Image (cartoon, rainbow, N blue to C red; front, side, top):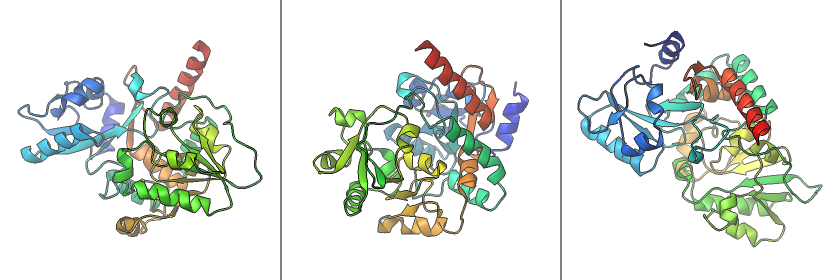
Length: 347
């Protein structure tokens, strides 16, 4: 039985599948996200090859998602892209933490700058309205409580050498990150970012992944940066909020760290086109192939609070990970605050 809050959520997002639709998904989705059907109705998700489907879901942008998209095209069925919301959980997905929000996009992944995603349309719509008053409380709560997509790391101050110079944070990413190519970036974008930083008079800090430092994974610029005098590598296991509290500016290719920085009022420079770039809120140094995207987005000029409203209110669906009740954004924030407090008490 469809409860009223769920009905309201579905009605306000008409691009979602109809509640109770017969939806197919790959084996990967069935295995990795056994709770996913809760977002679409009581019936379990089916195989992508099952008869009588109303559409097909895919998660992310890797091979299983490409397979699902191909099957949807061949069967001439509607297809929806799924991903975690920008406010996900306390723990990590790979550790089994269920997200408090997901996004459902009938057009493209939110990281796919080459196509007009539903998120891009919502940002454009928010820019033309009065979303400041709704977006501001969400942004202020996120900043006050030091929240980001994942919230499993402490807010300890990173270990950095003191300096009187402007402190510039460069965000490295794990090699092969889907968002780099989807955002129309490339390995050379990281080289250009580092070269530009070296030409500045700033103190340069490269935020890298602990797995890259340990040699388990490869980054785009960590190896090169580690050999340069005057460049500090930061792999401390601390929160995004803790990192952003000690820097003056953030440069990135496509990391969500740039979005977190915007919410906190820091200047942000992008070397590709993540969803928050191209709207006049960031300084953009993109490759030629991204110029058409920036020209498209230049027709709207949202404020940070309008961007917040689109990304945290209009776009995702929030559900309580235990009761599956539909939540509003501020309710989801309250839930995560309590979860963080509980985790700290039991640690």
